[in-house]
Amino acid sequence: MDSDDELELGRAIGKALAFYRKQTGLTQDQVSERLGVERETISRFERGAVIPPVPRLYELADIYGCAVGDLLTQGSPRPLDQVEDIAKMLKGMKASERKLALTVLRELSAHFK
Image (cartoon, rainbow, N blue to C red):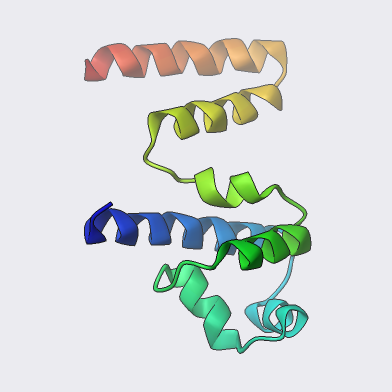
């Protein structure tokens, strides 16, 4: 992994961290207090300036009530991660909504080929 890939990974993880924090209604100050770190540490994580160590990702996932994998794969450029993300979106839809979403996705896919 080169430095550009690492930067992209950091940004993707950071966006996921910010998304889940906001989804739980917590501020950076509240998260930093729970973890016993400075607020700037949370800010660096969310900006992608620093990739959190794995044990810290587990702590954050516990705080946000999500799987650690969600923090790592949301916004990932890897096709397999994106497929999983699409599957999660489809799972929460009614059958008629899934059918429409798949139709749109197929049309987009055909357009970009």
